[in-house]
Image (tube, rainbow, N blue to C red; front, side):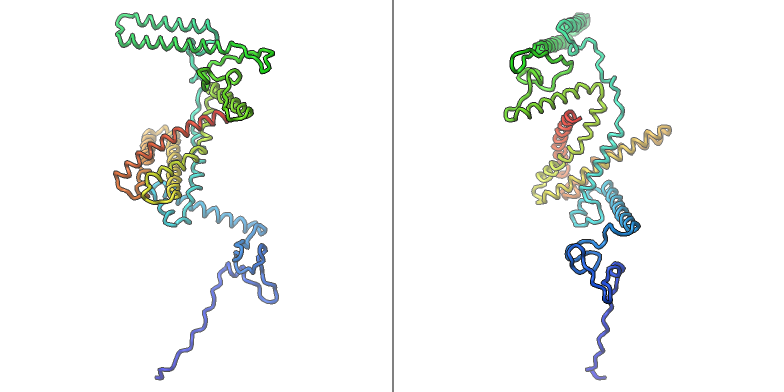
Length: 410
């Protein structure tokens, strides 16, 4: 056999044409080549290689548009269910997956945090019990703070102190009890003097800015003022709150806001539900501001891990998203428990599940922190407790600020 004999080369393979390529193939014959309507580059597929614009627009058959929308919705829904399951039952899994670059199969952390926070706070508002305003009304007719005149203050002080003196003189009262009664008498006298001072301050007429005429004094309120200025209760006319570096217009607006806040505080006994609902309504925005502080705490406590701040922010997003999901689970179990009140064994089982959900809430965050940062048991536990304590302080301050904001905006 001749060793120089060579086989002929194989014929070139024909390109495989997909359905998408077949739809956008350039027309044959004398038809002009298709171009992108946005930049004018030749069109060779479903997207322009020059500007990236899609060949598919809204100007086409409605059935095609609805088909694309259904595909997008079902694709997102599948990712949501997968993400929620992994978020709740696998501590730190979503975070490690995202850090490893596997992101397409899950919902983005910020979107998950945003939607779960909105749904959770909406569920909290729906599940709030109705508060009876009558239960918050003080029925004590001898309350000194409700007295409107000096005579009423003196009368109520005398009645309260007289009753305490009678109790102090009863046989069998030991020395410690008598000391407690003496402290109560001193407290009543102090409250009475403070009330007399308020009545005297409210009775003083105020003079107009030009000094020409007197303006009637502001009616005395039965509730405490929001603040005091130089030991004198704040009043928007006689003793306004002013900031030296603010303009007169801004100071006026500030005092008007304080008036509105005081009015809301005074109406809390009449309509507590409205103020509580307004407070819960501003909590999502408040937590959105507090959450980056949690990421800063993680950055400080894991400084030697040399991780970027965005990695810690990712941990914070997933942690808060899990907390909101846990709140939804706990509320759902409580709602189911109220529905099956006739079956005691089922109510007991749901109560146990709800207790387990509370335990899992704190255990999950510890397991997530250990899995993401890969430290030992004791080091993770110490940092978990210290970070939790610091974040609790931030959270209490945020809740107080949210309460003030709700007083000003509700």
